[in-house]
Amino acid sequence: MTAPAPYRSTPLFDNATLPMALQRRHATKAGVWGVVRVIEGRLLLTYLDPESEVVLDSGQAGLLLPEQPHFVTPQGPMRMQVDFYDQPPG
Image 1 (tube, one colour):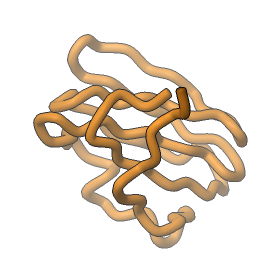
Image 2 (cartoon, helix red, strand yellow):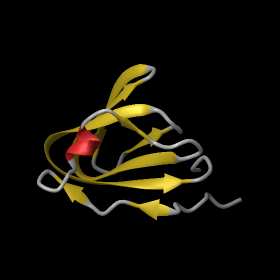
Image 3 (spheres, helix red, strand yellow):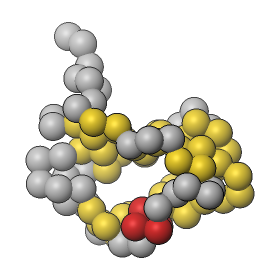
Image 4 (cartoon, helix red, strand yellow):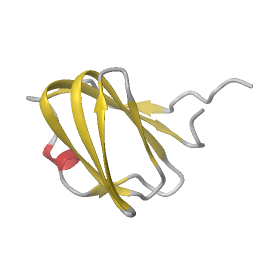
């Protein structure tokens, strides 16, 4: 069985283009999973419910569950993107 493909992806963001909305509390919509992909550098992904933090390095990804509040914080120069799925990603 093949992994589902994202139905939408954000543009590639770097330190200069990362929207403030992603750096403040927000959540995916009901029925939407997100995958934060770090292309270069390092990013801190903070989950607010349940509370936890994970540092994502280049080549790593962080899973966002539907309606899960979170935010991201760059840890120096970085490039990242978010893919969105309408079912759990592989």
